[in-house]
Length: 129
Image (cartoon, rainbow, N blue to C red; front, side, top):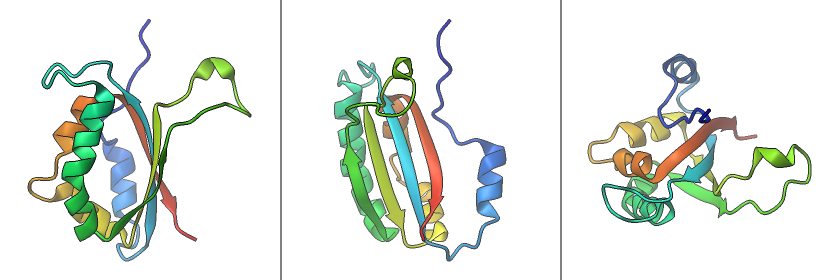
């Protein structure tokens, strides 16, 4: 049986997120699992995601976003080994929730490139304290 993957926003959770104060700073934790190959481009998922990041960078800047960390997990020190590691972890701080929402809703934002590159993902809202 194939493991379920998650690439789209959960509408119920997104609605709760939308009820938060819009001027609140926010950090988004991205856990990423890349496709071996992206049929639309012929690139690997990792290379396709790199293209997404290049095209998304101007939108990040406009949203007041800063990449705090981007790297590849190496070793599970606590947790089940059979769970496997994500291909990449990305932490992005946004000045405000409104900035994040404006970015993902902006005309031309390359969300389709992100979807094409990924086999599975998690996007976790974390508050900035």
